[in-house]
Image (cartoon, rainbow, N blue to C red; front, top):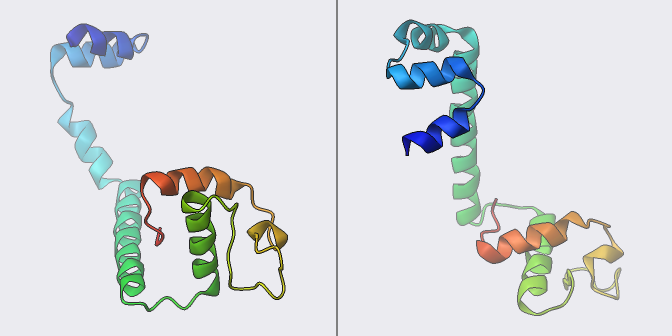
Amino acid sequence: MRNIILKLLGKQWWVRERYLEGRIDMRRIKAIIRSDYFILFLIAVVYVVIVSSLAISRHYAFGTNTWDLGIYSQSLYTTLNHGKILYYTAELTGNPSGSLFGIHFSPFLFLFSKTMGISPIFEF
């Protein structure tokens, strides 16, 4: 295990020496924690966690009122489970083919649909 870690550290001799010595520079860690950028980073992480949890709980309570969420959810679902490429039924009068490509050209959704096949959670 030690040889693998040393090989990964490779050319950065200063990291390698600190790993071999087994010591951690506590002064440097304290300086990083006291820095303004670290505090700003912590505030951003806390904000993202709080807002994301509120948005997901709102979604679970059927409080999301977005039209596009349903369209994209159905189009990804039909792509994965029924073999119809990005098919949805919400706007069949304006888009007789039923494909999302008739309204929006978004090839990124093909890559995203593979991710949704692994973990089908539509609120993210």
